[in-house]
Amino acid sequence: MTDHLHVIGDPVSHSLSPAIHGLWIRTAGLDATYTARHVPAGTLSGALMQLEQEGCLGANVTLPHKEEALKACREISHRARQIGAVNTLIRHAEGGWYGDNTDAPGLMSALDLAGARQIRGRTVLIIGAGGAARAAVFALARAGARLVLLNRTMPRAQALSDALAEGCAEIAPLSSLRERTRHCDIVINTASAGHHGQVFPLADGDGRLFMDISYGHAAQAQLLAARQCGWQTQDGLAMLVAQAAISFEIWFGQKPNATSALEHLRQNVESMS
Picture 1 (cartoon, rainbow, N blue to C red):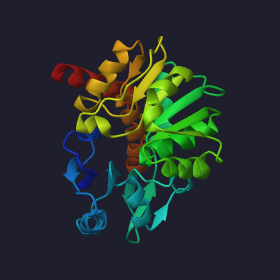
Picture 2 (spheres, rainbow, N blue to C red):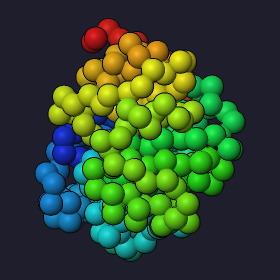
Picture 3 (cartoon, rainbow, N blue to C red):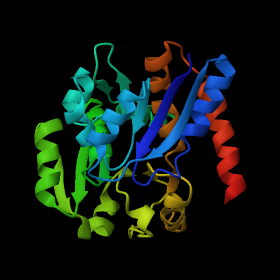
């Protein structure tokens, strides 16, 4: 019997998750499919009911559904409960969904790949306060980083700090971004502004790391602007592959080759740019 899996989001047509999991499924010789499914904002509950009726094995969850997915699950991992967001679903044997969050370990793997192996004591500025930002704060606070959270809605950023950083993160308005980037070691953009063509202004980077968790066209303009300001840049492909590998292991009980998948995706993305 074929296992069916999906990535669900709004938008979702840009997602490279089907390419990653398709590669691993073929390599492992599994009888499974993985496709993108557009689920408009506000319709997640009905979509999950439909996927369950179809016998779907599992799904990855992307913007804007990660926090809503937490509420829709019958059971969730300790990690997902603490983060307050779910990005990986597996159909529960007794009905409903089990939810986990693989973004936090995926981010740390991507930082390590970018050369940021020592996080403790370093100042990390995070743009945004959504589901992906929650995973970032969860991981980085536990790694000992000094956190600065910038968001348009400051109460939302403060709530994120209170929930996952013991209220110790510094909070500032997004309008202060250029000035704030003068005084940090790493910048991580978790906001979806790139999908709408927005580019954030930055101070001179002097070789510091700017990571955008988006990739492809959505991250292209922001990463170009960062490089022009002297930042070392990293897109979201490494994080995407790292978190996907954990999801794949949850579903199928085997570890895929993340290195080969990242190389494959990088070649594809560069050929399209």
